[in-house]
Amino acid sequence: MFLGGYMAADDYHVIVYEILAYLYACLKKGVEPEIEAVDGYRKLHEINMRYWSYILVHLQMDGYVEGIAITPVMNVNWKTARFTDGTAITPKGISYLAENSMMEKVKKFGVDGFKGVASSIATQFLGGI
Image 1 (cartoon, one colour):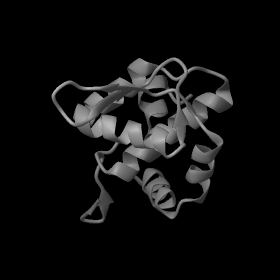
Image 2 (cartoon, helix red, strand yellow):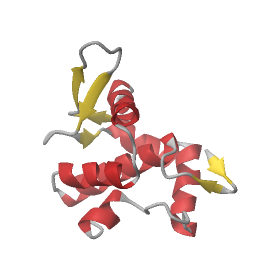
Image 3 (cartoon, rainbow, N blue to C red):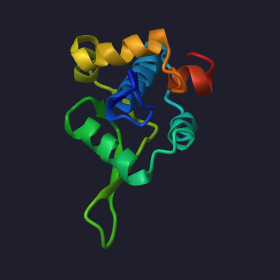
Image 4 (cartoon, rainbow, N blue to C red):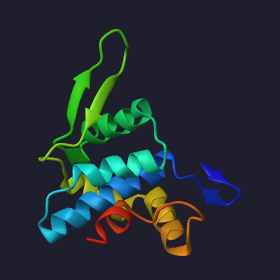
């Protein structure tokens, strides 16, 4: 959601962009995504596990990523999701980054400055893969 002209760090589209951009950067560099880096990003932006899992589940269900571990949670109607060593962006995820107009807006804010929002998982936690 745009707040006062800025997109919030916990906005769905920002998180999706960050995850897909990070996975794409890893793929191009030929390195495995670092699970600790992704979890650090989630913690830094105080993204609760239910919301985080929701995003990861839908990224995989929609075909944008593969290799997400999805586990039902007892006594609740949602599933936990986490990165695994096999998590990767798919060709559909790469196309989504390139073609989606909301992703272009998120990218623009990344270039212009989020005012308090991290520019990317790769930059923040891995020194810019």
